[in-house]
Image (cartoon, rainbow, N blue to C red; front, side, top):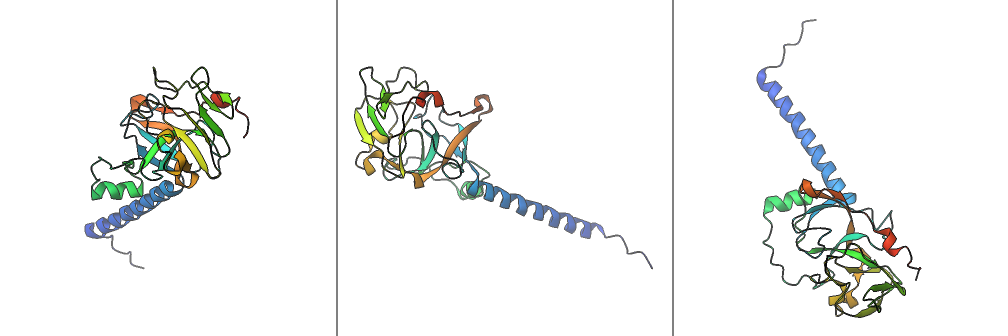
Length: 227
């Protein structure tokens, strides 16, 4: 049988383009699946979590919590604004290219309608402030919080709340500048519905000089009894 002629340069180029397009489509599809079901990147827009997280940091958020994995007191979570927490955003709207890449998961979300705080109270918990030493209490047990911004009090605002089912109570680490659950009693009594939670932040990835795992301070809540 006569041998088939070798494909010409144009045919080879078209074949290469088709292969590259297929690889790109598969990569984009995998990125979208990962962003939708597993991990999403977020940009930190404010100082409310200093010094744990600084403005401009980028974090990765696991979407498996809550879900297959339970939330715990001390977890840092990203959640959609329950309504009115952010007020009128001053952030410039993202361009169409950024929105597209963010949707796919190739760049961090600019967090326009999301917040990041630390879970202090779980469903059924009684969270109050302050005891005679100025500390936050959970179910009657005072907690010592090593993650607080240096010089901040646990809270300059007194409160006592019982967290309802399906909700959490959250505070920022930089308490003196954080507009958290304490400041929204008129919106669901400051509670965040678990359905609004995107996931748990588990690693700070950018800038590289600040790369760190965001570990749960489990010892802080070790003595807190179940509600």
